[in-house]
Length: 80
Image 1 (cartoon, rainbow, N blue to C red):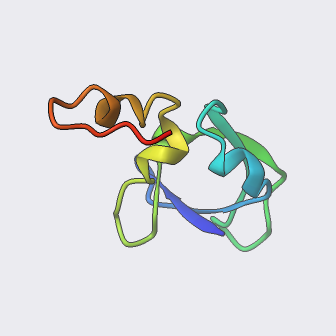
Image 2 (spheres, rainbow, N blue to C red; image 1 turned 45 degrees about the vertical axis):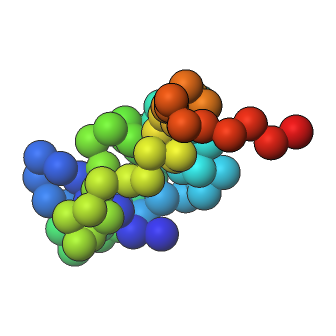
Image 3 (cartoon, rainbow, N blue to C red; image 1 turned 180 degrees about the horizontal axis):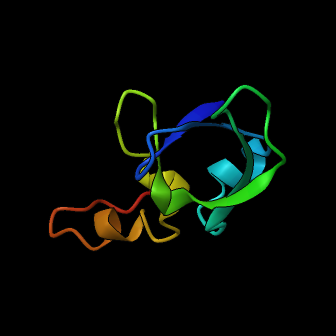
């Protein structure tokens, strides 16, 4: 999957989808696609990456507590 760096707008190809989807992982390994040659794999902070369209990554990929907001809502229904 290709993502874009916020600061440079360069595309990077994520090499570990598991880490990308894991909200407890703050970083992913990816290869930059800037320049003419494919770059060596590097570690990128997920907080510094966007979709190429400019959209943020889904909260469930970056926030391990993303469900807590809904559990603590005043009208929340707990299903067991």
